[in-house]
Amino acid sequence: MHKRALYGLPLAAILLLSATQANAQITTNDLTAGTINTITTAVPLLMISPDARAGAMGDAGGALSPDANSVHWAAAKLADIEGNAGVSLSYIPWLRNLVPDINLGYLSWYKKLKKRQTIGGSLRYFSLGNIIFTDIVGNTVGQFNPNEFAVDVAYARKFSNRWSGGLALRYIFSNLTGSIDVQGTPSFPGQAVAADISTYYTDNTLKLGGKKSTYAFALAITNIGNRISYTKTADRNFIPINLRVGNALKMKIDDYNSITFTFDVNKLLVPTPPRRDPNDNTKILQGKENNVPVVTGMLQSFYDAPGVLRADGTYNVFKEELREINPSGGVEYNYNNVFMVRGGYFHEHATKGNRRYFTLGAGLKFNVFTLDLAYLIPTQQRNPLERTLRFTLQFDFGAFQAQNKE
Image (cartoon, rainbow, N blue to C red; front, side, top):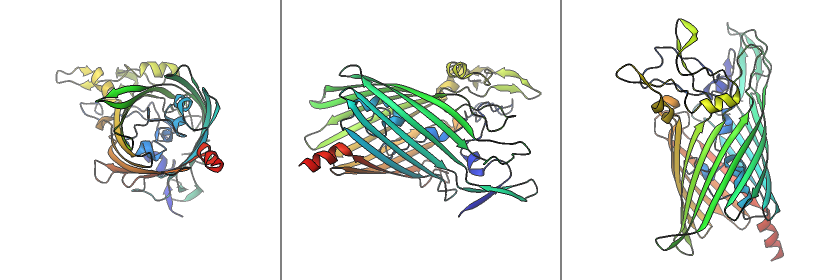
């Protein structure tokens, strides 16, 4: 088993920003034009795209056609799902370019209740590998396998032929230290309860260039929940409350071929770290206090950025707010609803995390099973996300029952 030694918090947790405080502070010298001012949260695993289909399309799955993984993207999509019941299982070896034993598993399901109502759920489990804890002089004080998981239940209902709405409830458990003392301070697992609200619109009556087309739109606010703390002395961390706006356009070329375009924008509804006086940490020079209640933080996340330094010495707040919006898009070619080829791109500004990568993937659908694969290609060399693969296997119970009847 692979082992890593670390004094304090797990190395992998630090790499993933799992234990980084959302109200991290930056000094005057830190905040200049182009300087990093990343928004960090607890349990960032909630923002990892769990399924290979959306993962192959630049993580732009907000308005993709519904399937069992819709619980993650927008629960409202479940109301428009065609099948009667289904389940999906995904596996992602994460950060393989750094360590060999960090993994994400995702299990999701759905069941039609009535023509206009659907329920669903998911289980997400994240293992950060085996960690050896040491004290400040290098003596071993413990060994632990940090892990996090989230359990969801979701309900979706159609309001009309085109509009639907959805609600998901989520329990989050984050155990990063195994209750080992961190620098002399007792630690404990972080826990949170969160909710998603979403709406989904679809119109399959369009014609573009004489071709039958379907447009879909999704709006979702996810992970609305309490802040997390891992010790009694540390400030509580925001979880990744996120606003997602998704668009998808499917064009049917002929009876056998179709092509789908997707475009998503995401923005964390989490306060931006302010610019503080290096001589007086309590004094804010630019921006707003980010140690605030959840609702306050969500609202002020639209206007609280310290700003980008202009040539005249003033700060452009709007420019930094724009940097906090992450666009992504993808395309999918579908042959006879049997074979799919996909590609996409995800962009994050260099001062806000600098995740920039292309994605590729393919899918193969049988009568009952669908197998999807995605591969991530970073734009920078020696990127921790290099060699990231996603695997998803879906099972359609409705198709299975129909096959048995035949």
